[in-house]
Amino acid sequence: MKEGKEIATLAGGCFWCLEAVYDQMRGVESVESGYMGGPAPNPSYEAVCTGRTGHAEVVQITFDHAAVSFRELLEVFFVIHDPTQLNRQGNDTGTQYRSAIFCHSPEQKAVAEAVIAGFTNEKVFDRPIVTQVVAAEPFYIAEDYHQEYFARNPTQGYCQAVVNPKVAKFRTHFAEKMKT
Image (cartoon, rainbow, N blue to C red; front, side, top):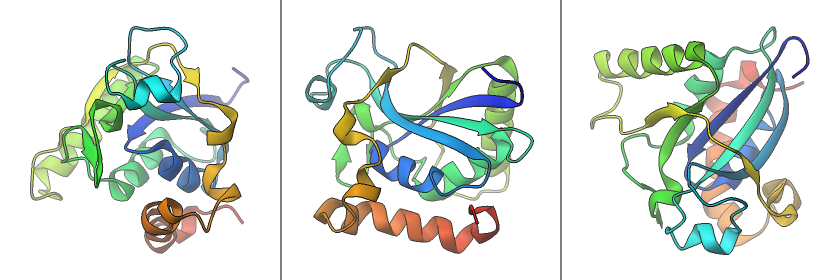
């Protein structure tokens, strides 16, 4: 990893949603959709969709921590998905759509736990946060057709109904964090 660069890996439902948001965030250098959290090596999208591989759909974010902090990435994360839904986001159901923060260091784990504790203490959500905070595991990049899916397919039905509202929410709540 280059000096000043850090990796964050987040699961919050469909990876297309998270990728579309983080691609627009200041300080984010790249976002790759993929899979993490299951025992089988090199899972395919079709296998992950069954819910039997143990993997979650994730985004792996490379960011410049001088421009954006891990805490800021998490603040966006908790706004653009529902961290109180266990193994689902909207109509997407199964463990592959769980809410999880895959930590790459003890510092990331401490920040994630502090952010969750803060939201819990402030009663930001009506229900308990079920987001898992776990150690990062091997990352498997998703098939090419999943990369930059929203950017390439903005008029596709799922993108219009599910991804676009999350992008709009990011733009509304975090305009100051957008790339110029």
